[in-house]
Length: 185
Image (tube, rainbow, N blue to C red; front, side, top):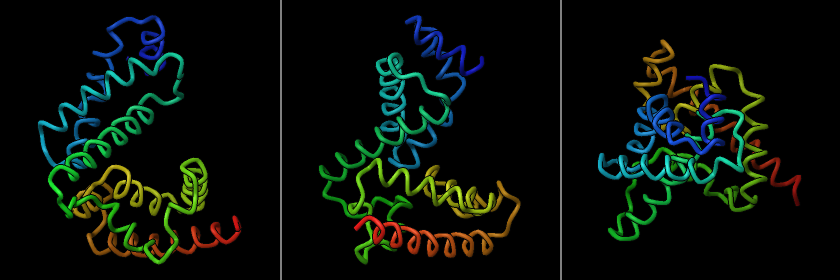
């Protein structure tokens, strides 16, 4: 079923919208939640929470891309759950690839210098300047949390090429964010 038709079902408050979303994007959303949370039960609960959140948000929201909107929702809910889980366990190692970016940005160039909306604009601007391959690698790693071997397989590249692209793109991102932070002041 087309995304526009599913969104229409949400607007009509037809429960078929939820089952259509689960059928079309359930595996993707579950996979994303599991990569963030690392536990199957938490990922399944997060998927259910995502479908409920979509039901509650559409309408009034009318996403242009149901896939992107659903992925953003599951990521936000997964990170919230991860934060609660880590607080309960007092665990320091989440295994989330964003730790790689945070470590790179730890020299004072962190997201904290920007509001969430500003950071989103800066990130989108950065991604728009990348070559398609570098953008795909960056998004697969830091948005979809794919491993280096998975990215290499999906993009028909060698692991070392992926690592190299990630290293260089991360370095460019640090420079870009630093420049934008200075412009802001």
